[in-house]
Image 1: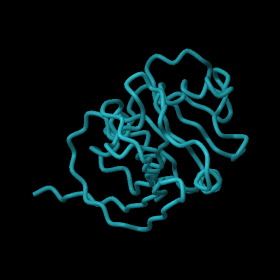
Image 2: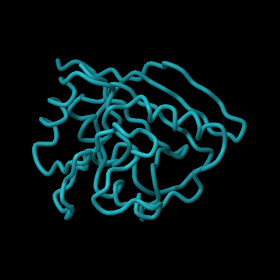
Image 3: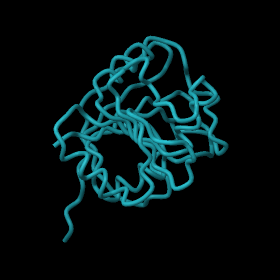
Image 4: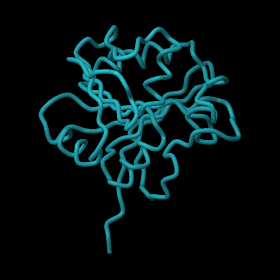
Length: 185
């Protein structure tokens, strides 16, 4: 079973972006960037919501192109959206229905770990379905006060077991957790 790792940046108050999707206040330079780029090379697939995918347009991503392939050319992209308008390609597919079933099937395949890179609502749905195995959070030294929540509107509960942590000189803290889910009783 391929692990699904939610590898994401967040503010201290657990927002992954401002309400408009921007990330002002998040750190973008420092030693953590090289560590993050190395982690991207370890993933076989990336999952993201439409807003996360379209966020890449501001950084040169062209509509219909897969993201992050300049870092990991073998990375398969899956964009979860009912409204995306580009044609899928060799390294990018659109998932518009049966999201949970699709992710279960993807996890059951052989291959490298799966990276959930963003989409708070998508993360919330996958948490509710108990499909996220690890949380790798780049905790930024900022309080946003409002924005896109780490797990969207999900009210699901999960237990976190610390795997590792690393403090960077710029104040960012990388914390990795294994996610445990309460058993139904």
